[in-house]
Image (cartoon, rainbow over all chains, first blue to last red):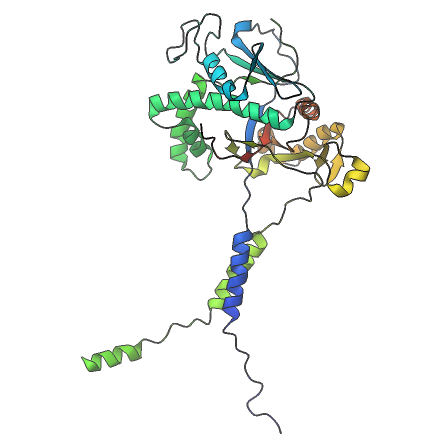
Length: 202
Length: 158
């Protein structure tokens, strides 16, 4: 007996539910990946044309040996004390030209934050994880000092200001305004973190 | 009152949900195409170290990636267990890094070439000796902006 009215219609009412399930699955698994890390500048391979004379007292040497032990200024130091030691060195202001420094003004330590250099040296056997932790502490020392100055001058954290400045979604007008502030703070405590493995001359 | 009520209910037809599956499917296809399970086929273990003072890498068009770490299990018989360098999809030697970076940089538009950042994705168990060699190679080709890729760690409670 022939069927009347053609084949029965398939019920598509649950289609939306199935699609929603899939949608939620992909929503959850999607990660719009943003990488993050520590920015560093390598020194150029050609030596500078004129010899730059750096006083020994303006260099803060950090040595990491193959067991992950730290030597800061020829003294064994714990990782947790490193940030404070680096901050004390940067913030010292030994020659009195730095009017925003709050350090001890020890003449045996760095003259001025703009002259202070942190030199990081490591053994070939040093673990990468240790190296990064030390780098992190040193960058942290700079960031803490910059935050302090930024809070004094503008009432905001430097790290927040910089993140907003680097964010491509920030308005151009706000970016221009931030640029000046960010560069001023960076000028107060320039990040001079040397990782050249060549020996320093005195 | 009664008449008004009756008329209003009659003039409000139910909202048609027939187009709902289409809308949902559109969203579904969008997310399906956007989802990437993993950008590259990693042949090395890549457990990144963690750090707190990190910066996000917002502009992806100027990044060159170098992966370093111990080879995955199935490559150990050939490459051993010592950390190896992976460029794109293959293992490489330290001397390959210079040409690789130059070639990648050449492929970029001219205005970006000076802004190139090399992202070092290094396994935390790798030794600094290899990293130093890599850094030397990068200095030789004048790729001086580098970034040590790390995972963000929650701020230490001190």
